[in-house]
Length: 78
Image (cartoon, rainbow, N blue to C red; front, side, top):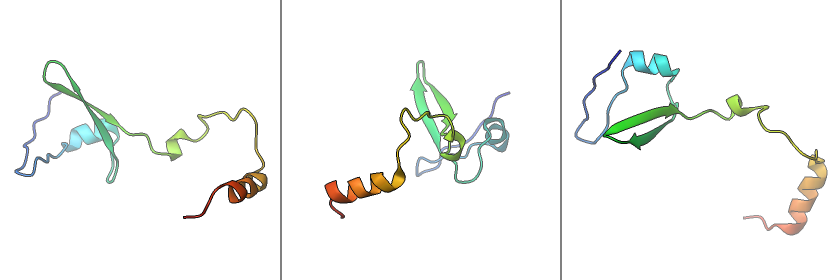
């Protein structure tokens, strides 16, 4: 399926509803636009932090209280 949209005077465009639904985009979501040759653009949704939960493994679990004390000793507050 193809979609058509118009670029405004400010260089903005609206992603058509069908394409937003296909990509799973909602109000406030961010997307990555990657130019590809010849004259094509790849649109990829930026994953939210919540969707990344559990995807990273911690090599050595750290005590958060000890980390806080370490940070307070070695870093200045801004």
